[in-house]
Length: 422
Image (cartoon, rainbow, N blue to C red; front, side, top):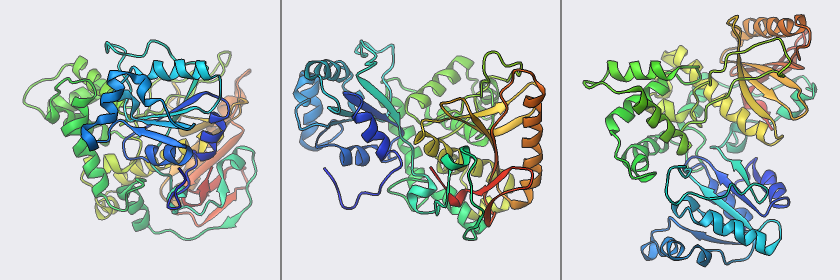
């Protein structure tokens, strides 16, 4: 099902690799990030359960008997499979029956609750691999030159080079417009939020939730984007802006719904080797999958961002985290953040499969590079002082307004986000 208009995505070779190793793959991620378009590019047949034509005939067939939607040339795409949860076990059984790799591609914009009566009965381990997809990185959307590879940074290799100058107004537009394949306008993120509040939070499990309170919660998350904001602070935020109090349990339920809809993708804390004497805090960093979502919730425009550099900095970090998550996934690497009990923090940690890890600071302006470098060097010294600790093998500052990629005399890399790729 190749399409000449298809824009290549970084996940493409990962999909091909997993199809060669597993009977099926499950591609999950937020709505409108390109899952269906990309999956169809790798499939030879497809069925779309959320297709409203013919009165959702495909979904009705699947509800009658899941086996009815399994036929088609492999890889066979079943889009939005979570609408009929019984499909999961049907696919697993069919993979076992055929005994071949690369048979199915499943996509979903939501997960199935463990409490639902028709939940899958088997994890699919060994048969169905899981891949997460996100909105487009700057490299995928054509806004990064891709002159510097994250993989090469992690190997300690970077050639010094000049890169195209970027203006603050351009960075602001990248944040506001986001990485939506159908994008190019802040209206996409606005409609995404509207659909979430009006439809998605009900459709996921049929529970009616207060859209006003959900809006307050989303705005609190937006204000605390790229921070380790505890749930209690979000609870306080809502109660300060609502005439009726809300319980912590309700906040937890709302956060769970957003997680199941892939509206949030929190960054886990970095955990050194269990034998390491360095102990770190275990709070997750709050993160939306695309910076345009918190920007929309905060009613930001490019000019408002420029007039509010503090908010600009948080949302720029969100953009960089989105891109790091995408680039790292191509190398089967993990992205974390670091915060220890001595209040040392690092914006991002990229951990490779072999245990090597790099510490990354994210800064909007080139005038912040020296301070970020000082923080990275102090962190590395801390690990080197502790016997048995595994210090970072790479230190790097990702910058918004730098016009060069290079390695400083102290060994710290400086890389503009508009020059980075996987």
